[in-house]
Length: 313
Image (tube, rainbow, N blue to C red; front, side, top):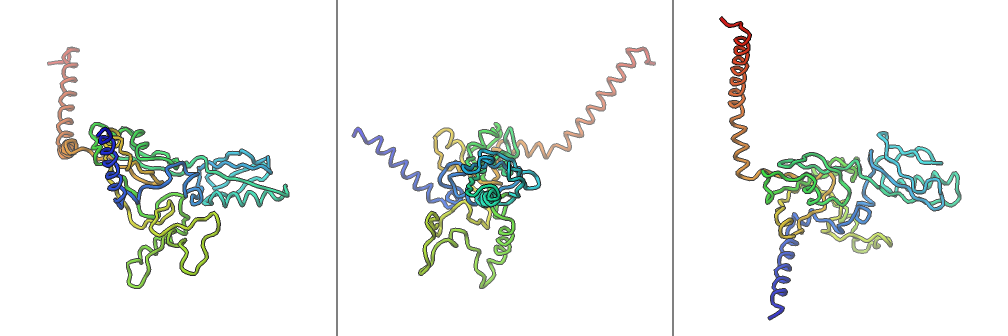
């Protein structure tokens, strides 16, 4: 009987976790592992855009070792010894290959490692009843609670009904190449037509078919149904989150890992919504009353000034 309390608590937690795992929308948002971008599928899928910051590291080419560069508006970076290199819309691996090729002019054996150290081109957006609305930087490990803590919901907010909106692919950002995004949009438009197959996700395309060879070593095939970071999403998804459950009960099952261009909307609570609606409805009348009051206040002030100076009749 001494252990009945912990066992009951463990059973309740297991039920809650099982219920949360069954939510399709939650599966769409959650991304594993919850770590900085270098440990997620974004490391290979991300395409650098201005004004991102990249870091170059090399053992055999000391001139470019530990060099950090912000991508210029023209998409170029200027590296020691090598000079200017176009990196716009390229992945870190593609940039690495270009740097190694350029380094062969000066060294027989070359190597280079490129990391994105600041995702300045990527943002998430917060709107609604918050103290600090607007864009916030996306770091690759930005969660919903991070954004809410920075924006700070106001007393008029409805913390039980916070919405996370993830738009359909493509969105503005560097995760997908522009040509791939355009092709995907065309495929999505014709997906409902009879006899036309829906666009495949990256996960579906990498699953080896019967008789095909498995993926090369180091490239684990993704199972059909997985939701990797680079999966194409042809429809927008909206998830409602209860912030009180996270803050007061420690339920972080919906503390989702945000993606670039995600929108967090904090609505007004029902009572505040009624007040704001009435305020908007009565706004024309209050403005007229304020103008009328200001006019007569100014007229009285002028009249009083005239009497005080002896200009009266």
